[in-house]
Length: 308
Image 1 (cartoon, helix red, strand yellow):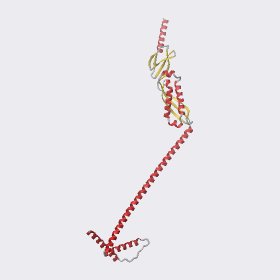
Image 2: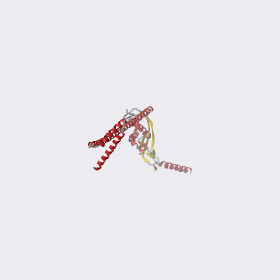
Image 3: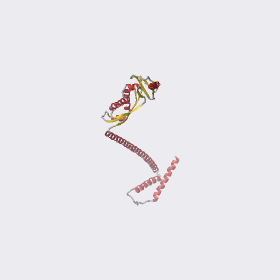
């Protein structure tokens, strides 16, 4: 009886072991490789699976989710012999669990070392200014090179990002001084350009003002000449009328001519700067009679005009 009970118990334990060995549950985001007598046979995807107990066993448990690994900092010598420290990150995902498990040993280490090597290659072919200003171009070149190298491993390199590029301190100080000098140079150029434009505008304004003043003087001179011409015409006409009247024996015209010259002489004497006080005999009746003659002459001229 005791023997039978022990036998049944042994069978139950064996059944549990067989079931536990045969039944495999693969979680989402994982894939297992199955080996029979040490040789790869198939890949178990997420879900419930049965394998042959004692013949089949799980070889590798692969993580199929996207993974991120930091690229350690390293010194890189640029094309212009500047030494910079560079680090970064790499994003990759396994596409083929079997290739990732059996085509390369220590996959993560292989990817990191491959990225570091190509960082030195790509960045070593560029100058320091290109490194600092073309980071996207560096990332693209690294991604292309590393992806081609890792495709036989069943790995998809999604992104490679350069996190930090740190030049030496003395080089940073020199670059800061250079940038400051460039900014001061641009500021000086802008100031000089502004002053030049201001001087040009001022000169153009003066030029326009001079032209306008010259045009004003020309217009004033033209109008003055026109006024003098009209005055001369009027004077000539008046002289002609007086001469004609005198020729006809008109005493009043003669009185007008004498009075006009008399008044002009008095005006010149009064305006002379050397004459402060004037003593002269003045016959009021003669001047009044002359003015009366002027009036009679004017009336006569107006009457002749009305008759015409």
